Image (tube, rainbow, N blue to C red; front, side, top):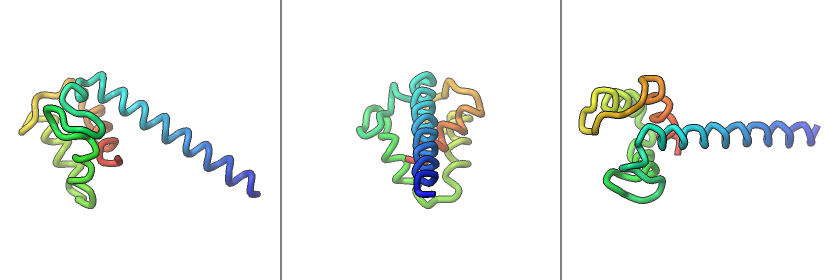
Length: 94
């Protein structure tokens, strides 16, 4: 039983790591990393600072998706609407 729990935990951890890497790769291919870095401010705030700013805000995801989709207060994003949603969810999960 114990080994089953350990195995399940490892599978979940590997899957989460794969999703995180895929999302980070999507951020790079969409041009986000031109202005944002994970931990440090570039032209825009760090991804982790954005997550911290919106932590606990239930409306944050919708607000950010709309702002990025309509280029409101942010330059136009080179990503599809679905990819923008993925990027926002990833960023808020940091």
